[in-house]
Length: 406
Image (cartoon, rainbow, N blue to C red):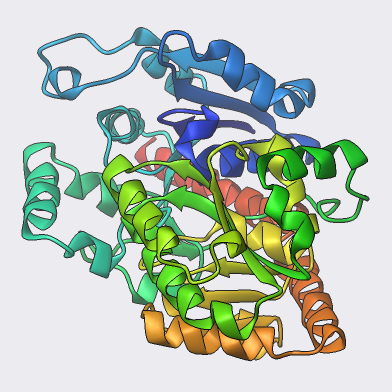
């Protein structure tokens, strides 16, 4: 079975979806499938992309590039890179990761038009609260559905993939009758099982020299963007800092909103214990994942998530977590791996106090629960098995329909 995974950008700056693509591609290739990743490429990014995802290429996954797609391409005023059509024509199944950008809309429409089975992963992009957070955003999405004829693409997909039923319950349905499938993201089973090299610890000491003076450390490892709720976390940490003077907060993020980042920086300046918070944009990408092993507690205070790669990695590293309900993983609390709170500074403060008041042994047990939860549900081996089953069902449905027309 020839699988085509489509994404609008594989550069590390694009956050979690490229890691999902790479992880699933390797796992599917290991299961014996023929896997190709098709991504748009901004000129000058090729070296960074191939260096970052070298393990995927080494595993035998084919990586193909196409030119960026804009609105003029989408409405027919400019020809779309022929590479997209050729890749879809050569595939048995197309899996589109995301959908609101012109490149992904184009790929999904081409797959539908050619009768190629296709799936769409939502990656949190249908979150109802995020969609309606501003009137302008809501109107923009409605216009996109109407102008670009995207409703039939949702309706006819072989599967709209949500990370969990909880995510689906918090999401908006663009059309009725979508075929919904629940498949989480994954992480390699080996993640979190090897010692941290001394050089990595030294690198962190250079970037965040305060870290060495903290007895316990909290980690925020995600995009610096309003949806991630970092401002609420800093406010909550400022409220508890004096009561836990030996605890620090490491914020390692990809800057996605400069204005928001400046606002967060001002909040950090208000911390009564200034040496207890460090924010850096120098610890991103796979080569910086060692920060999980060096920190004690993971925190993700998001307003909206699909299925967080960062949270899955934290579970793999056996880290207790404090997350909001919109991370869509209530198992964190029910399995004793952390706490789930509302996206509100007061609730996050309460969660911080509950975690930081735990003994070392209690935190160790929570970490063991986190790793157990990960091994049972979120390794790429388990996820790839579910993906292959979904893809196979799509090809069977196509074959039955083609046989019926003969």
